[in-house]
Image 1: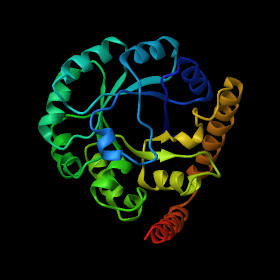
Image 2 (image 1 turned 45 degrees about the vertical axis):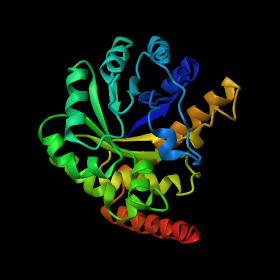
Image 3 (image 1 turned 30 degrees about the horizontal axis):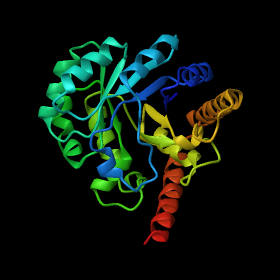
Length: 272
């Protein structure tokens, strides 16, 4: 089964997500450079803090606590130290391009948490083999939003159709490093249908996916009862579909990949 991740700073929502079977609760501290890269796009700009890390830590009993720190900057050592002290199980390094950045990150984490490398730049992608060969990462996630912007693609899921994500996944498999990519909506939803996205995860041997904002958009829902209902039913539906996928032959996934590529082509042609 895929490791499901959900981004929230709310202890109440974190408890609900954990209860529903979400594997990793994701607190997002990244702010540096994000507005410049994604300004004008309909993306979430985080307002999470180290205090939120500690608050979420207090309520979790099963799910692991993942924290995305900022890209390497003058205050990285102190930020990483604070996040580790707040109880993070996994630290994610975003928007790196060089091996030197990953070396510094790895040194400062110091074995106190798992190191997840967010591959979302061309430089990170091209240097990943060397980075993993030197034992500088424990897990990899492919950030298809920023990576597609760097590659000047129209639609982030083009990176599934053109082989970009698959080539990164093969590097991870070579070094026996678990990898995941992107996000997924609830079943029946998504501009690219969630069913096709999940089938692609299984075709590629992915380990993890983020539950997207559209899975449960907290900016639109205040009733915690409704949030619980969305998580319990939504995660259960994904797990049921995963059990279906586990029984399918290779030909099923080849056909699903073709359907996915055709849908991606439709979307990109519509944006021409």
